[in-house]
Length: 610
Image 1 (cartoon, rainbow, N blue to C red):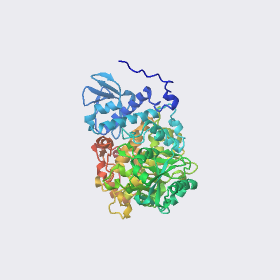
Image 2: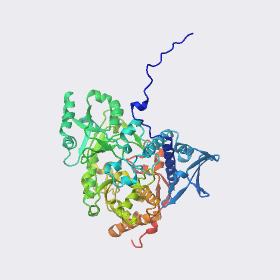
Image 3: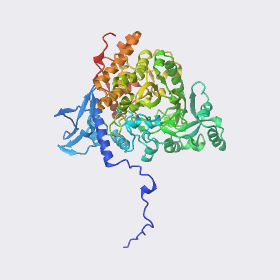
């Protein structure tokens, strides 16, 4: 029997490196080893903080045994107030029956699967999220990444694209399941790309649009956010198909969403003309820390655009609900009126960046069944830009920047303190007046709460000192604990029916534990300000606010920030339980996964008189 011999290829294959940039050049053994150690250090620290593991001390080292007791993880750590574990990445070691084994974050998850309560259904995707987070860490360790010293004087979007830690509590915080490696380079916030949004038109009868006063007509909004000839070109696309532009609403889309979801999942609607692709927008945008929100680089005074994105990231598919879009401008108007009309908040310079308009598509098929991510695939909102709110001697910075540590371990917050010329406690006091005091006032005086973590605030800096704060992401994340307040019908969604004793966690957990704990550690680690002094200054801010508002004494007593302990909210337990939808946004109680009470570092500084 003979076999046919295929002729050799006429030419050798062209190496991939000659065709396109190497999209995985950042995944070197050295960088991945550093990323693994940093990720495992963070994981061990936060798992200990959430009481999912109980490290045992032995000869100056801490030991965590795996589900299989022959596996042991060892590390060195400093324990700081609020049961914070500052783990030294270089100290981490894994042994099996006493023999050394590679440090690997995914292996840590496998070693502790039963301890972590990870079901076999959740585990594979969680491991993928850890791998993607490691890839992001490796990218951030590139040699050309800006240093903390360089970022201390950097521009707003240079800072936004350089951050290392947006959500410090979460272990798998850069999963972005759905993005390929080319998408990572094209759309990840840390790659600081220039992105042009896609635009589609949807039949108004299947959509909802809402705007604040003056923007009730979408054409008024679009006339300001698009160039006249650009808007005209979009409308010509509709007319060329025999369609009347007056019958349609326009929706900006994330390019990934257009290619991977709308062009496929919405194929029948595209074929029928109920949905029409108009083309690519002219302005270049930069993705922000929140992944699906874009800042206009060509016209910075124009609004942010937040888009739907069917990518799984940190416990949620990042879609946008048409039902939420319908009431978003009304909610923002109500919150802005409250904030702007409050003398204390006005004196502090605290304000909100309103989401002034929103549009959402109601899919004619998927609206006929129960809630699902398919109902959140095509929507967008427009949020005010902060660039018009700064004086010539001021600049903007995402509050995530205060937790940024560069590739050499230098804290950006510490660099800002050094550059300011202020004593560290004086710098911290000024920052707390800009950030913490307004959040306290909203909670105690108005029973109004935000989600005030690093990605959701923009700081205004003067001479390297934060002097005031701008709150954003209002429509989806604001809550009102006052169930008796008179509210317009379209605003009533913000009422949050939470037990009275849990309401203080909006400060104690969301602010003190999930944000300030990490800033305290960063400044302590840098040698800038000891953690005990940090918490003394936080207590002084709270005490000063309370002294200035004796009329709120009953609320201070009911929600005591100087109590010896408070409930320990465990954010990773939520994601470990269900990384597809870790909480029901319509049910605040679903967000509670609790462990042993946390010792409160503010308690030692309770004012002598209240």
